[in-house]
Structure formats: structure tokens, C-alpha cells
Length: 281
Image: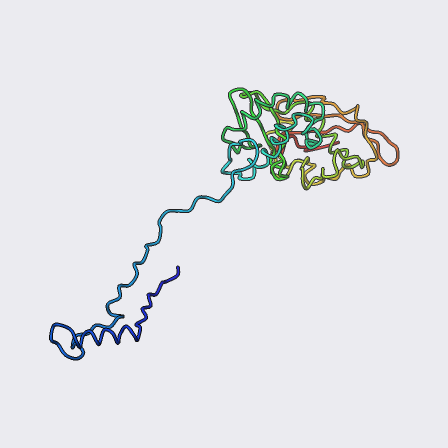
């Protein structure tokens, strides 16, 4: 804070006038008064204005786009969902189809058709759960994978509130198709890399598809490139063969660089990024 100084200038002419009046005054006193005050002594210092205790208004701008409930445990989540909702609110399904390549293309038209209901659900406070961040209204729940949040653009799964979850057979099949696309040079998007969008179960996943009661590390976690050398796969051959609520089995015909085609069996479960592949034989 800056200080102020009061500076009083005593004019020589004024001071001389004061001496003359004093010498010739009607009080009979001659000469210079014996109790003369200096000009600086009689000056009253300026009052100091106390500092204001009123806080200035916040300069943090409000987020641009649809309202999204914050998630204190995951500060990036609301912004990632808002980026998607901004496009959906402005242009509907066509606006988000090119950017939501992590979603099975056949599911996008029905998943995001009710824009008003999705926007309504997003306004609720977000909850950071075991496998996803969710926002729920009385009718629907939006679920966002952690990899989607990290990307800054989260395309949510949409399911009825209270249902077992958003993990469909189509989602499982698309997970395998994405995994195979990476090895055969046909990824669904150039950015679809394991480091950014994990499809392989990590070493923390509980793995016991045979129900032995002795879980192990998912085999593919320690050998994620098991299908290196694959040349192509038949997209029409990818389908869910079985599921038991915890594990899902998907078949796919894969051809190696020697031209040999083999039916591969993938076993999936649910992890922190939705479906993950724990084994392939």
C-alpha cells in the first residue's frame, strides 16, 4: 500500500506578513511572540483510509456450455462430459458421431437420441465409482470411463437408472474389434492406442473365469501383444458366444501373416475402463 505525506510550504511573504501584524497588533505586544507555533506543527496530517475488508468479486469465469454436476474426487470429469454435451446440445447425434469413435457406431443413434434427458441427468452431482464416474436422474444414468475423462472428451454410456449397467454384447464385440484393428493396421481411429485407451485388463484386475476361488493376474496383462503378427480379421465373425455376469466370451476369426486363419477366443471382464480383455487363445 502507498503512504501519503502531507507537505506544507510556508511562504516567505506570508511569514513576513505575520511578523508585521504581530508587531503592530492591538494587544500591545511588541516583537515576535514568545510562543509562536511553526506551520508544520499546526498542520493536521491527512486521515489514513483503513484498508477495505470487502473481497473483490471473483474473476473466475463460469464454465461455457451445458450445466454439469461437479465431481470433487475427479475434477476433470465434469469438463470432459461438458465438452461432449456442448456438441450434443448444438447438433444432436450427427455432431457427436465423428468424435465418439470409442462407442459402437450402431449404438450411437439410440444412445444419444434423447438429448433433453441426457442434459437433465448431467446436472446432478457426479459420483466417482469403482469403474466409472456417473451422473443420474430418476430415469437415466450417464457413465463415463476414466480413459475418456483423461482424453478431455467423454462420450458417456447411457442406461436406465437402477439397471445392472451399460455393458452390452455390442460393447464387448466392439472392444475385441478395436483390439484386433490395432494389430492389423486398421484401428477405428489413429488415436486408439493402448496407452491412451486401455483395452487389456491390468495386473490389478481379479481373474478367475474358471471359478477356482484362487484369482490370478489376467494372462494378457503380462503379454498384451500376444496377437502381434496378425494380418487381418473378419469383422463379421466377431460375436459374443457366452457370458455369465462377470466374464464374457467373444469369438473372432483372425488371419496371420502366413495366411492361416484361426478362430480366436477372447475372455473379457469389467475393469476401470469398461470391458477389458484378460485372455485370448
